[in-house]
Amino acid sequence: MTPAALPLVLGAAPARASVDTGDTAWLLAATALVLLMTPGLALFYGGMVRTKSVLNMLMMSFVSIALVTVVWLAGGYSLAFGDDAGAGLIGGLGHAGMAGLGPHSVHGTVPTLLFATFQLTFAVITAALISGAVADRAKFGTWLVFVPVWALLVYVPVTHWVWGPGGWIATKLGALDFAGGLPVEITSGASGLALCLVLGPRLGFKKDAMRPHNLPMVVTGAGLLWFGWFGFNAGSALGANGMAAAAFLNTMAAGCTGLLGWLFVEQRRDGHPTTLGAASGAVAGLVAITPSCGTVSLLGALVVGLAAGVLCSYAVGWKFRLNYDDSLDVVGVHLVGGIVGTLLIGVFAVREMTGRTEGLLYGGGLVPLGRQLLAVAAVAAYAFAVTYGLGKLLDRTMGFRASEEEEQNGLDLTVHAETAYDHGVLGHGAAVGASSLVSPAQKVKYQA
Image (cartoon, rainbow, N blue to C red; front, side):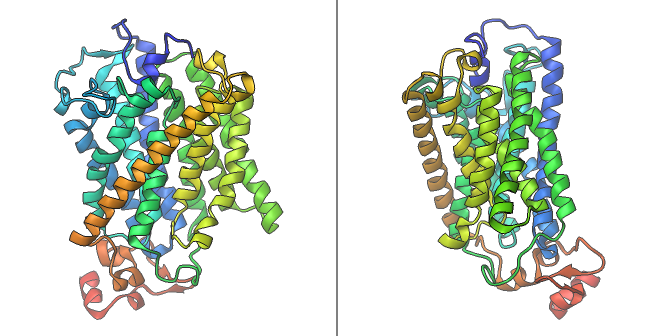
């Protein structure tokens, strides 16, 4: 990345203010790709839960699209990418309600409205990612309140720190993040951990089998995520250019080595490479390359993906040792993978990509690595603390944990009055009729 291109990545428009049709066409496509990631995530998560909560899992992702969009348009974009309001912590409200951003407003070489929409899709999937940590046991009504408030309190400020004009991580600390390791992966992972602790473990955690009910669905979701990730990472170049091509290739490479690294661990540790492991490993590699796809060489991307595949495959087991129930491994994949990818920028960054910064292995010394470490620590601590406080507040006022009866019977029937499959739902590994999982009153409601 050349110095001239750097302000685009950090969210500050350069002096040139004319629309490039090629850049605009690519960013339109990239925006659609990133939006597709949230339905992909819904399938990925939906296949990983038991059948009695599949629809609830899908709904938690889909409703995030609507909730975050409203918040982003009302003020989220302005607070994240508006002129700094002081100390590099938050933007102003000059563009609240998208004021002043008409069809002729330009950000770099693309319409500002398109840039805002592209960034919106990042905010959407970040909120949806958190749902995997509390699958099977969160109140849907409370989730509807949590998502928009969390987006404003956590995602928006961190995004300003990293990409907004005058954000302290980018301009004062000088840490690098090309496509969202800090505002997307680390905030979602740290926030997921906080909610795990607020809600507590699922009924039967570490006792009952809680296997994915539909692995083809998981792999389909992972495939859609991988497809959309090209828009996520290459689109962050904000143009149809060489940087987009480099980020695209690095994304492909890291996804592959992440997959292979996870399978290697499974074969060595368990003697069986699994389908779930292949999907999870690919996602881990993609998570890790997100912050570094525009800063490392192809060799660096291969190493970043491999490191994430190996480390995340071990990290998902921490929940059993430390007794926190991260249902779908948001902490093990997104927090750990995000940390790996963000820190390794300080090791593998090359001047050809960054325009200035070099990592430890290329003569940059320990300073770049120290900057990345400080950024990771600050973002993870902030996201965890705010989410924990918000979660506790909502739990005490509205209740965040579903009742024992709702959890036992399944959130699909008790919350949404639907089931995903006509032939019954799977409880703990055995298929039983849906009617056997509900009370007489619930039967009357459902049959009616």
